[in-house]
Amino acid sequence: MVNNDVINEVTNDAMSVDAFLDRCRAIVGAGFVLDTPGDMAPFLRDWRGRFTGAARAVLRPGSVDEVAQLVRACADARVPIVPQGGNTGLVLGSVPDAGGTAVVLSLTRLNRIRAIDAVNRTITVDAGAVLQHVQQAALDAGCLFPLSLAAEGSCTIGGNLSTNAGGTAVLRYGNTRELCLGLEVVTAQGELWSGLRGLRKDNTGYDLRDLYIGAEGTLGIITGAVMKLYPLPKASITALAALPSPAHALQLLSLAQDRAGASLTGFELISEYCLELVATHFPQLPRPFATTHPQYALLEISSNESEAHGVALLEGTIAAAIDAGIVVDAVVATSVAQSRGLWALREHIPLAQAADGKNIKHDISLPVSTIASFIAHTEPLLQQAFPGCRLVCFGHLGDGNLHFNVAPPHGIGHEAFLANQANVNRLVHDTVVAYGGSISAEHGIGALKRDELARYKSPVELNLMRAVKAALDPHNIMNPGKIL
Ligand SMILES: Cc1cc2nc3c(=O)[nH]c(=O)nc-3n(C[C@H](O)[C@H](O)[C@H](O)COP(=O)(O)OP(=O)(O)OC[C@H]3O[C@@H](n4cnc5c(N)ncnc54)[C@H](O)[C@@H]3O)c2cc1C
Image 1: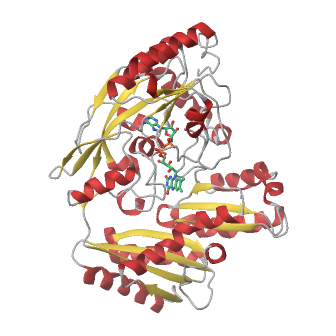
Image 2: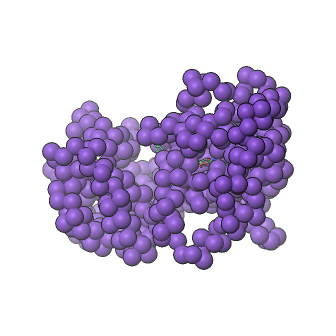
Image 3: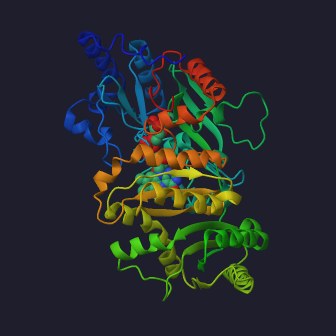
């Protein structure tokens, strides 16, 4: 149903390309149609620097109306559009392919905070607003916008919505989808759908909002959104617990949920090898325990009452876990600085991995209850198939989300080990699916995991997805080749 050959009938003709670009310049002004290699370069390279695509031009509209006009120009000329926010996506969704026929449509000039309604607890923003600016605007209004991830200084709300981003507070507040009440979208035909409704209840037919969320720019362009705000907690208290195994981490998660309920706002799993990597590459970060332990859990409890209440809740949880033989040792942060220090250990794991060299990454999700058994089952399989490989396993345990990355054995070059990528992916993804999990928890599909998606989704599910795509983007100009 989706025909990638439909595109580019007109764009291959040089005169038509010139006419198309002239039309774009007339819409946004010549300064916002970038077409030299130097100007386009940052928009064509993916975040990890693994791939650089090619494009006719990078278009930088400054208003929703300009977005709509540009999409109409692209639809008329059948020019493929790659929507782009902060370009921090990790699955090659926000960069064009090497064909050079597409345009990148960058949303970063649409960066206004449009309105805050403190009583309705909503914030209405342009899609190109940077996540950190949205968090700050909420804070200035005395509210919390809970979406938080390490790329928050660069990623945009439109990108967060299009990837249904997760982050560190999903356990309490949900993914970006759960934080969104309304959307404004320019359709693939260049029409404007204004669904900027700040409603918590709206059962009036098919939920178009939920179709565009997580669509990775393949159905239309999100230009604005109404997002939920929450009361600002009085205090957030953090602890790091040392544990004998992932199974003990699951026991601790259950105990913490029973005792703290919705106050448990973070629960991360960290293996000893992850802390070892951080210690090697960031020796300035203090190791929290004198001895090593197989696993660690980072817990965060937020209190809307007081800091004392949060500390008591967390210390009580840890004490109960020690009594039950679940936790071996623990550090509870007694200051904001200490709390930041514990989170810094977690946040430096991806950076330490990068400093260590390339590895084979998996962003997987599993039913929470199966995680310990998944790790216990899969690690020996990996060792059997790739003796000496090193597992870098960490993640948002409370959400059932693991970063399950495989690094080469000592003495084997990182590039050489990457030759095993397909086989390592197969082993891990087959096991994930056998455990009822998903091959992409947070980062999406993009171009990187498209073939994996085709392998693991049922024909019925794939055909339903193709039918949605064909209905909303009949000319297949919206980010073709991504997801499907
Ligand atoms: C250091 C680091 C840490 C990260 N941590 C996390 C994490 O914890 N959790 C997580 O989920 N992700 C994480 N990511 C991935 C990434 O930050 C998220 O996917 C983020 O939501 C992407 O936002 P962006 O604005 O950069 O989007 P982009 O990368 O520009 O685009 C992502 C996708 O959305 C589409 N898109 C972008 N804007 C629009 C729009 N307005 N309308 C339609 N389609 C659009 C693009 O075409 C592309 O397919 C991390 C990335 C980095 C580099």
